Length: 121
Image (cartoon, rainbow, N blue to C red):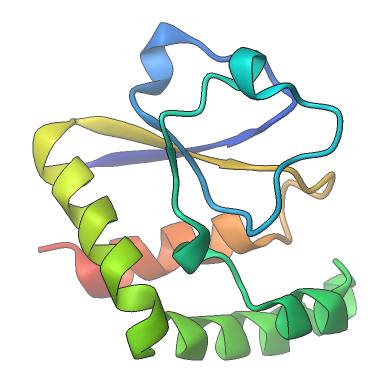
C-alpha cells in the first residue's frame, strides 16, 4: 500500500489516487470545488481539544502522537477508520490531505504511521 501525504494547498494530481482530507475543519481559503478532495473523514482528525493543545509545537510532537493515537483507538474513530480501510482495499495509492504548514509535525504524518504500523495487514 502506498499512503502519501499532501497539503490541501498543493495542486491535486491524478497520481494522488483518492484524496482523503483528514482535518476536522475545512482548509482556509481552499474552495471545495477546487480542492480535489474525494473523501472527508473528520473522524480521523484529532479532537478539537488535542489540536488546540498541540498548536503545531514541535516540542509537543511526541506527546501529541501518543494522545492522537489513543484517540484513533476509540470508538468515535472506528467508522471512519473502517471507511478508510475499505478505500485501501480498492486502491493501490491514497493521499492523506492536510492543511498544516508544518509538513513533518501534523496529524496526517501521525495517522500515516498509525495506519502503516497498526492497521494494515
